[in-house]
Image (cartoon, rainbow, N blue to C red; front, side, top):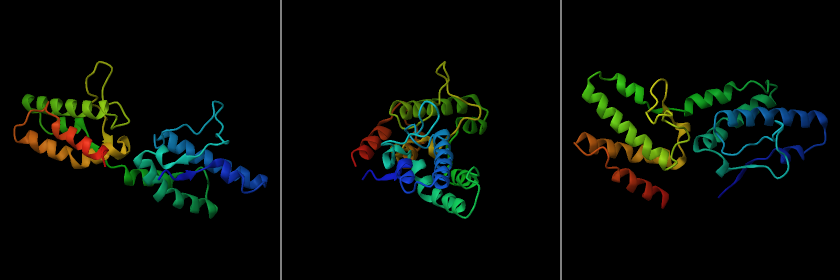
Length: 206
């Protein structure tokens, strides 16, 4: 069910008091800025002039990334309670803390390369990472681009975190990447992605 989770206009309608409306606007602006800048929502809550959208705008479950929804459910209530108790609306440390707790690093090409300097190992890692990232990118399972303009994999400081996956992407990585990796460890062809393809089909047909 696509539940409505946030509506700026609905909050404004609760009172005509100017102080209340200013507080709501400040809170909504800070919250939506945080979620937009951290790629936690898939819609733009702002007008071209930078003001918040009001009329008929709301955030539903489907407007959040999977990670964004978890952060909204688990840490926005804590941040809201902090503000209700007189906290500074511009202090988003609670949200940042939640982001760090939930946002576990799942894959790092550069870390894998550092594990061994032999040429054969580095080639195996590069082949695996290239095939895996291509599969996830082409099937819209991640929200970031792991490739440079020349088509090579990004190395320095690039990693995939929970928040970089779509819901299906995270489930596929959790459930089927280990199976595919085990198949490769047994000498399987790195270009054979049938395990990932079957996993994707199974998850999308649920």
